Image 1: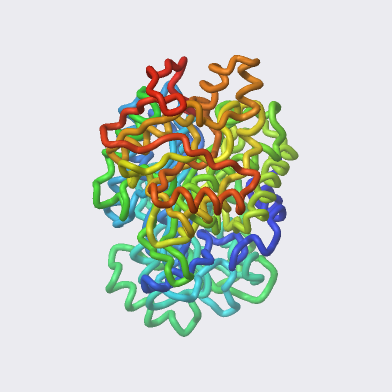
Image 2 (image 1 turned 60 degrees about the horizontal axis):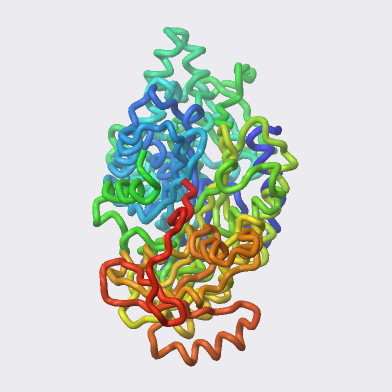
Length: 315
Length: 315
């Protein structure tokens, strides 16, 4: 069978264009035909994300609460990436006969605790028998502004910025991360970027999605990539390897955005006051072109780095 | 582990009451805090239902198109039961490595073809690796009237009616059924019943859910139960067995409703003109009490029938 992205393309082509809703499929969350404007704010958003035992976590390797937390958090991250506020979700669980009931209750509690924190309603669900445990969550949200922030709006001249520090999420971050809801809302309300998404498959691969959807190229300054302590730990002192982790490891769940150049000075100032503990790093620029990335080191052109793998695949 | 319904109760108790949304969890679809009234019509509805290979169908035993059709149809049936119109869905698929890509495309096509028929948008999805194939669909809809038709509104004196003919769905109906969307909308617009649900676990078990949620009892006249040709075929001429199939087989996906007594004459007349090929059978009455069913045969009390099993469980 094909790779994840080719298969998604193939399935998308099965859907008649008129049946795909107001926006083409491909952003972090779907924009719904219901406007939702009567409750204030922008259109309704809907996203779905599944976690499967043995793929996204391993029962026995992480706490049930962390697994449940992650199942909801990956969905919250998608709503954050659309500049939205989460409102309500449904959870469909696939439960193997052998699963311990206590484990399930603790999983559920991890999910609910995060929902409480973000004032997100749990309005229903479904349980099925299955061979491996899975949790398929569908989350509804409301965009804070009428203008939809997707992946296809990046324009030549835009800056490329990223929140937090990247790489090494496998050490703990992948099931403990804080979805960037406050940051996404702040951006959508005050400094709407031309494009935004959450990093789930690694910076290089995810930036590629924005470039392709927007029909542009980019230059990235490797000296400006914010490298996490976990990426450095994994690299054991090898700074080239640490950089590679930051560029290609999956499940950072940070925001990748392309603000227009006029916004940069004010956004930068305002951001530091508002989110003193979350860095916003300006790592490159959007350029004319067709989906290529050129590489810099402190502003000087360098040959493209070679990666052992381009990015992370859950599939 | 506990039975399906006990487990759902247990999970529900994990959710703080204030986090459950405007209505308690338990109806066929959730009623969302977004009113959706700006697009005309009533509140937004959200439902989720999963089909798993080996539980809800068997790859190789039914056509991929039928399996895909069923994955969406069970969700459409839930929206029908709330007197709603479906609007948009997302599909999360769990795909084993061994799955044939052609099978998957045909599955998808079966789903999309039914979506086209009901003008329901496919706005996104997600694919994951998993050991068994599953499809978890979340469907959004809009109630046609402001008054929500759930399971808890049945009142003593109401009639109990059911659409179509019951039992034996295993022979073909369970993956070929037509979700009763036109019928549900007609009822919600013209003759809103006090309670309504779709039959997925067998008449006796599902009626039990309405009785429990509404805090009432019921009497059922066995001579008035509409028995399907498939139920008769399974019973091989034994009419007692055929009746048992009609009362306890799962996956009828017909509507079970409790109209107030004043509505009956006009609804009955109007229904026959509007849906000449779908019978509406008046099988009993709601009574005061605490969730008990008493049994009649042509209006005369009889002892309770004994079933080999109370109903169907997917779990």
